[in-house]
Amino acid sequence: MRRQLGAELQALRTLAGLTQRDLQDAIGLGQVAVSRIERGERLPTRDQVQAWVHRTAAAAEVVERVVALAEAAHGATTPWPDLDDAPHLQGVAGRREVAASLVRGWTTEFLPGLLQTAQYARQLFPLVDPYGSIDHAASVAARLERQQVLFEPGRRFEFLIAEHLLSWSPGPGVLPAQLDRIVSVATLETVEVRVLPSKRTGTPGWHSFAMFTAADDGAVFVTTELLHGGQELHDRDVVGLYERLWTSLWESALSERDSVELIRGLIG
Image (cartoon, rainbow, N blue to C red; front, side, top):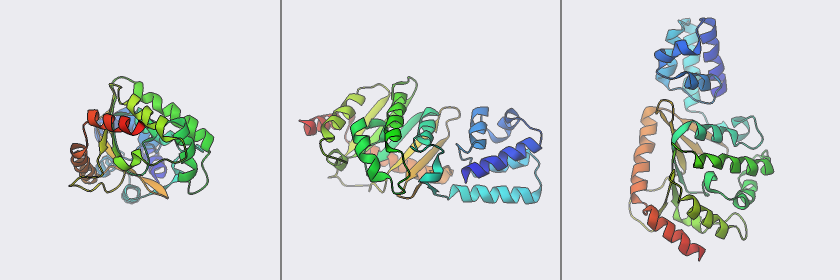
C-alpha cells in the first residue's frame, strides 16, 4: 500500500510539472525523503500528504482518493511476502537503518538482527518463516551485511533486550557464541546494550518494536513485527506513545555495565 501511495504522489507531482526539489518547502522534507516516499520506502505523515496534494493543485476527487489511500496505509499491516522485492526480506530493514541517525530497538521474541551471529540467524530463520517464502541462506548473508552499519561513525544504536532472551536459543549449541557477540558489540562507541530484568516492578513490556530517527530531517517512526506482517507507524501521537514506553523501559533496565556483566556470567 505504501508503494501504491508513493506512485500516486509521484504521478501528481509529475502531472503538475514539479520536481522533487519543488516539493521540499511545501512538505518540510529534503529531496532524499521525497524520493523515498515516491519509491514506497517511507510513509509520509497525513499532514505531509495534505501539503503534497495542495502543492500540486490536484482536483478534489483526486485529493479525496489519495488522502483515503494515505489513511489506509497508516493503519495497514503489510504481509511479509509483500514487504520487499528480495527473497530474504532484509532490504527494507537495511534501508531503514542506513537512513537513520538513531535506531532504538526493544525485543521480547528473539535477539535483534543487528546483533545476531551467523549460526543464530541460520537456526532462527526457519522458525520465523510462516509463509515459507524466505531464502534462508540469502537471509543470513544479507543480515550479516546489514551489521556493517554498526561500525559507521555518526550513528547511534540502542538495544533493549528482555532478560529471558539470554537463555532462549533457536537451536543447540548456538547461545555461547551469540552471547559473546553481544558483549563484543557492546564495546562499540556507536552501540549501547541494556537488559530489562524479568524480575522487576513497573511498566509492562507489551511487545517488540523499533524506532528510527531519520538522519535527514530528524523525523521519528516506529516499526512493529507480527506473525503475518509488519507495520510502519508515522502518526505523531502514536509515535509519542512508543517514545514514552521506550523511556520507561530503558530507565527500568540494567545499566550497560551491569547488563554486560550479566551476559558474561551466563557465558561462564
